[in-house]
Image (tube, rainbow, N blue to C red; front, side, top):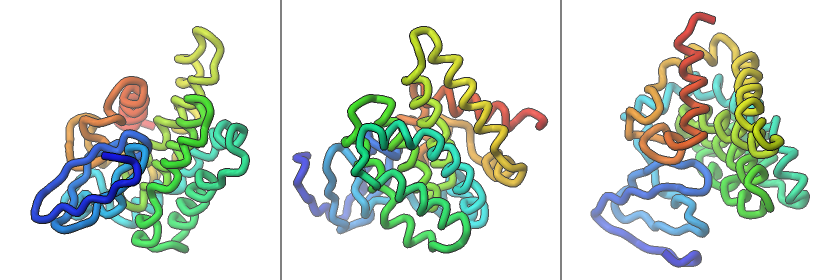
Length: 230
């Protein structure tokens, strides 16, 4: 697809992988207009939230949105140091916090959930791009609670990418430990209801970006901790 193209697809189901920010397949409803630059998933596409175990209830999504915002905000300086005039990632985190406080409806947040992912293209390093994608994942929690784990994973990846040679695994582990310590018991209970990464195809924890490589390893580490007594 050319970066500037718009395509109207009628009476079909289309699966699109968002390679730049949210990292999951989504189903387009008949007749929706699909468009997007830089590999980002179209804003009209969706996974039916009422059918996916990765969605969580709106109450739970508001709980975990605050934690996701905490994770993303920790690495936000990595992005802003490279793109000081780009406020999309910061705005996404602020909106995730507003959603967690009940100041934004799910619909209001969902309409803008891909904006921060596009900001990753403003970064000049893989760490900066990962930080922007952490913010995008936090913004996506209003749509599906599983994105909270994506925010944590991208944040840990961003930290690992800034570590000295041979210290990346230690840096990621330390960041994940901070995230787990920051997680409230209520958020942990909500996130514990999500399916294991890679085992359910109805959302971002399916066989896409979040189930692969370092991101998948980080999420497995968090989910393993959630299954253990706290």
